[in-house]
Every structure is written in structure tokens, then in C-alpha cells.
Length: 170
Image 1 (cartoon, rainbow, N blue to C red):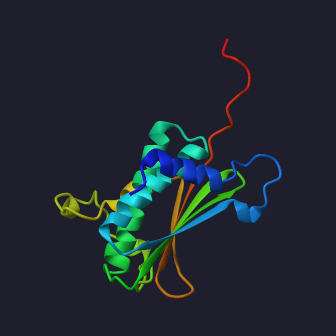
Image 2: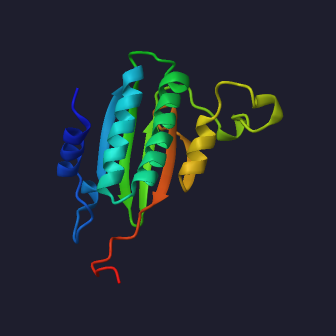
């Protein structure tokens, strides 16, 4: 397996860092994952590297990675039902001042409003059901769309951090 530092280097090599005139199609990375448990860990590592390349600090990278980990886990376990023939597409995009993450499964889809509130009294002791809650807490936007080919498309967005200032601290 690729070491995290090497993985980060590879991602940085393919992801232009929004410098000047970047072609719109170059602001996108798509990763196709198998419906396996190790794909969840891989998605989390890739997410941290992409977030780092966009200038997010360590705390924000951790939050973003955890939100994506939860989204990919849901796509594999609930969307694709761990079916080895079904894939998960993890798409990273930059659109203006936002970092957008799309997670597409090939399952039967779901409605975000149907997900039980994990903070409701009857759900407090349940061992599952907190993924959507965490995604909402850690990202600025969250919505679920029906994928054109079936399944669900989870769309999360986070405002990009301001660029570092070139002036030395006073």
C-alpha cells in the first residue's frame, strides 16, 4: 500500500492549486472505489491529502476527512450493501471559493429527511446513525441527490480557506 506522504505527493502532482489560469476540468479528481472496508480508509487518506493541498489546516483536514469517511462508509454499507460488483465514486472539485465532494453509490438511493435524528431520545443508545450528523457538523453544505444511473449522490461542500498572506507577521 502507498505510504501517506507518497500518496499526498502523487495527489499534489495531479491537482493544480488554483494558480492563475487553471482549466476548469483540471480542478477535479475522481477516485473509483470498490465496495470493500479498506476503501473507507483509502478515501479518508486521499481526502486528507487533497484538503492539505488546498490549504486547510490540520483540524479542518481531520473534519473533512472524517465527513468523507462517513459518506463513503454509508455508500458502501447502506447504498451498495457491500456488493462487490458495485462501485463508489468519490469526486473532489473546486468551484470558485468552495471545495466540493461528491460520493456516488450504485444502490437504491435514500431520502435525507428519512434519516433518524441521532440526538432524539430513542436513538441515543443506538450504535449507528451518526454519520449524517457528523457530515452536517463538519461541512458547510450537505445534500443528497438521486444519481442519474440510480443510487444516491451525496454532495458536501466546504468554503476554501483564505490564501496565506505574503506579509510577515508584525
